Each structure stands twice: as structure tokens, then as C-alpha cells.
Image (cartoon, rainbow, N blue to C red; front, side):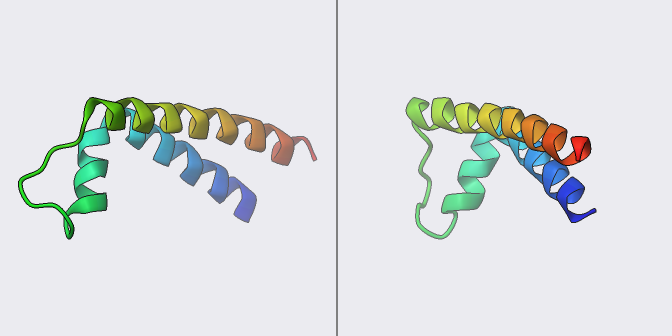
Length: 67
């Protein structure tokens, strides 16, 4: 049961990273940066990590559900 919750969380984080990388940047850096903005490289990296998280959630979900 806990594995299914982990898969859902991983999928949700991946979708969030792809859909709103600017909001993720604000959440990560609101204590460190004032009036700053993320670079284009950050957006590419955040969306890439989101895609990897979604793929991993499908693979992990398949492994968990096939047992």
C-alpha cells in the first residue's frame, strides 16, 4: 500500500516540475534570493527531472503492481 502512495507522489512531483518550474524555483529559493529569477538552464533541468520522475513512477508502479 505504501508503495502505491510513493508512486503517486513521485508522479505528482514530476507533473508539478514540468508544469510549474517557476513556482518550484520560488519555493526552493524564497529564503535565499530577493527579486531574483531562475535561468533558462534551471527551467530545462527542472522539466528534465520532472520527466525522469514521471518515467520512474511508471516503472516503479509496474514493478510494484506486478508482484
